Image (cartoon, one colour):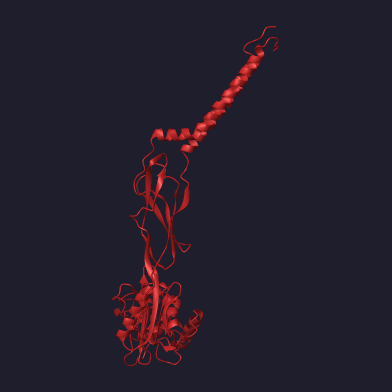
Amino acid sequence: MRIAWPPASYSRAVPTVRVLLALLAATVFLLAAASVARAEDNITRSVSMKTVAVPTPRAPGGISAKTGIVLDAETGRQLWARGVNKRRLIASTTKIMTALVAISRTTPNEMLTATNYRSGIGESLLGLKPGERMSAQDLIKGLLLESGNDAADTLAAGTASSRAAFVQAMNRRARSLGLTRTRFANPIGLDSPNNYSTASDLAKLGRFALTVPRFSSVVDKAHLTLRSGPVTHRITNRNPLIGKYPWAVGVKTGHTLAAGYLLVGAAAKLDSRVVSVVTGEPTEAAREDDSAALLRYGRAFYRPVTPLKKKRSVYALPVQYQDDIKAKVYPRRDIAFAARNGEKVELRLDAPKEIKGPRSKDSIVGSAIVIRNGKQVASVPVALGAAVPAPPVTAVMLHALGKILPWLLLALGLAMIATVLLRRKQERTRRPGFVG
């Protein structure tokens, strides 16, 4: 019997193998293309972590105040205290609450009419004429800086059905703020057995007042000009700390013969605040010196920390296909704050695992995240400090080859197996007696 060559089975098998190899080659090509063109997927990595150490400052000595306190405005923690729960007459520090109630009942540009306030000898006055019109915010400025009793009377009469109703609102607000040892009898601070507070309560009140923008934006000013009425009033802050110490940011003075000299003070250290209170001081000088000493002491509990600086690289990112290059990234702005002892400050970077060129200098590639005691306090864009060039073609090809080499080897192995199987089948067809 005549044997046909090549056998029909071989002719049928070769197209099938070719198709399989073609599909495999297409798959390899697509995988290589996907590898080369993959996106820059961001990942978040921890860059640094440190625990802040602040040595405990030496407590101030020689404080002459009858009662006093300094506390952390954010946490309320007492840093120094003397007789903090003893009731004292509080004079014009009363006007802190007067301002808060008036702010809650007015808009800044709302116009109020000055009352016919009958002042006593030596009272602090803004100098309002009866019937004079002035904006609520200018009245609050005159109330807090010049300690104007006429401004307090005008705000009370203009924002409540009566002065007594205004005082009731002051006492309700005190209760809502947890000022359990505080009572108001008038909006001015005139001496009365029913107008009192404590150093602790006054510090809480000052701490809250500094969170109210219409209040805090006033008490840190040394001078202001009031122009909302027919008469221009130029006023000066009676708080001796403002203008003298750059860190002083408030709050309010007070004085009567019975109360002595008082001051609710406040100081800043970057983003942190401390609030102080002194009461029953014998002189203005003692009030100023003691307040400054307490505020310096409070500020010493904080250490400035700058986890991000524009000129300091956050991290050096690998560059795709170019192992000899590192792309340094820089924050777009500084971040600084005052940290307490033992606080943990962590810096995280949210950016690609590696940078793919070409990218221009100053390209935004992610963000730096500042974590303080487990809480995010800032997120700042980060940008390239230098341009990243396009990768060389040879580097891309070698990288792609490394990715597809296992697939090429697999294809080669399959081709060799197919060849061996075909040869064996071919040999069987050549044997004598084979019937096709």
